Each structure stands twice: as structure tokens, then as C-alpha cells.
Amino acid sequence: MHRRRTLRRTVYHMLGGEGHSDLLVKIVDSFLIILIGLNVLAVVMESVEHLSIAHGPVFHAFDLISVAIFSMEYLLRLWTAVEIDEPRYRHPVWGRLRWAVSPMAVVDLLSVLPFYLGIVVEMDLRAIRVLRVLRVFKLGRYSMAMSVMGAVARQEARSIGAVLFVMMVILVLTSSLIYLFEHRAQPHVFSDIPTSMWWAVVTLTTLGYGDMVPITMMGRMLGALTAVLGVGMIALPAGVLASGFSEQMRIRREEYREAVEKALEEGNLKRSDRRMLEKTRHALQLSDEEAALILRQSVESGHLCPHCNKPLRLHQRSEEE
Image 1: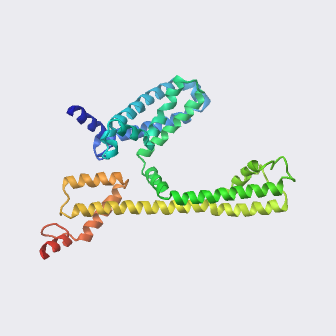
Image 2 (image 1 turned 90 degrees about the vertical axis):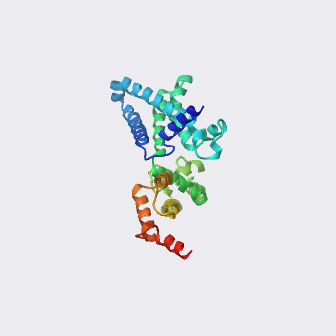
Image 3 (image 1 turned 120 degrees about the vertical axis):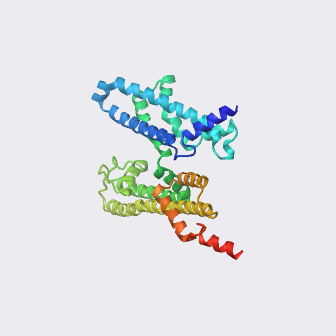
């Protein structure tokens, strides 16, 4: 039993659970990232008809190998889920089930599910091939940008929801008004309000495809107003996401700074402290440069004592005591 737990923990570390500074972990991560990229490239290239005909067996063989590797990765992650350092994952059954419904676990499952569905159920082969592009979302496990954007989406959920609600109200209002103004003049173009919503969407997004164009005076005035509103409506969610991204990065840097100052309270950084800081840096998705800058600033702000090599604030506190 102990040997099995040790093996499980080793596999957990190898898959990036902890210790991303280890060489083996970096090799595994790099291999999976390259494999995901090659899978997306294969999906794109296979859509070219003459390449699909000429190299069909190669694409199929590569897909089989990829599915085998991704399936093994999913099963290993499911097996080692109980090693996650959170109480809710400790139970051997419920912990694994909780992991299985987590966002990244669902992405891992969806990346191989189309292949197995194609074996069990009759499906259009083209649909199966295109669905393989879902594997690109597996990069979210290794991408700081996707991780931060997910955190921003959760942090700014209420603001984003408010923006979407306003956009929906404007969409319904403008499509109803354009139907009122244009239906008599163009009954086949603006035939009903749901059809008019297409015009409202492309006008609000300032695309203006030209397939539905108002010809009445009131319709054109409404079109101009809708286009102007669209500029503001596109800028509003962009501003929310930009401010949320900036705030999320500030929070993460502050959390890392607190971890650094806590480690510096006892003086020199021990090897265990450095491992802890590296684990914290990876969990917060900070770059090596950002972490090094925060560490240097924390040390400089503490002004290390030349005799005991401890921060002066701690040195002065011990002298006063």
C-alpha cells in the first residue's frame, strides 16, 4: 500500500501537481504542449482535401497515438486526483468525482471523447475530425493567460453579466424598432423581429455586412444611432476585462509578496523556503522575472543586516526585546 501511494504521488508530481521546477516535470509538460500543438495543426491540415487524400493513413495513425496518450494522461490524472492538497479531493471516490467535473478535467475528457463516440455511435467522420480541435483547450493548463482570464471572468462575473444584460436590452429594442420602420418598405428583408435581430447584431458590432440595409429615413436614423451605440457597447466589456486583468495580477503579486516576506522573517531563505516560494509562484502563474523582482524588492525594503544577514526590521526588533 505504501509503495502504491509513493508511486501515485510520484506520478502526481510528474504530471505537474507540484514541483514544476523539476526537470522531468518540464519534459512531460513540454511533450504534452508540443503534442497538443501538433494535433491542432493536424486537424487544420487534414481539412485540406488533397493533403487528406495523400496522407490520410498518416493522419489516422497520428490520431490513434494521440488518443492513446491523452487517454492515459486523463486516467493518470484521475488516479492521482486524491493527491491534490485540498480536503475535498481526499476521498478515494468522491474526490476523484469532484476532480472529474472540474473545468480542466472536462476539457481533458472532451479531447478524446469524440474518438470513442465515433466507435460506439455512428457519427459524421468530418464532425469527429473537427471536434479534435477541442484539444487546444488543454493548453489552458499550461497557459498563464488562460488561467488569469478564467480568474478575471469569475471576479468580474457580475459586471460582465450587467454588460450582457444591457446589450440584450439594446438588441431587442433596436431589432423591434427597425422592424417597425422597415417592414412595410422591405417585407421580405425585415420579415419579423427575430430576423431583424441579425441586422441589430451586425450593426451593434459595427460589422455591417450589407445584406440587410434600411431604406426609410427613420430606419437610417436608427441605424446610425445603433452603430454609435455599438462602439460604446464593444468598448464597455473590453474595459471591464482590462481592469479585471490588471486587478487580478495586482492581487497575485501581493499574495506572492506576502509569501516572500513571511519566508524572510526568519532571515536567510532556506532550501525549503525556496521550494515553497517556487510552488507559490507557479500556483499564482507569475513569471520568473516578476517573482525575482518581488523578491529583490522585499529584500531591499528590509535592508539586510551585514552581520546576521537578517532584515533590519527583524534585527532591530530583537535588539529592542
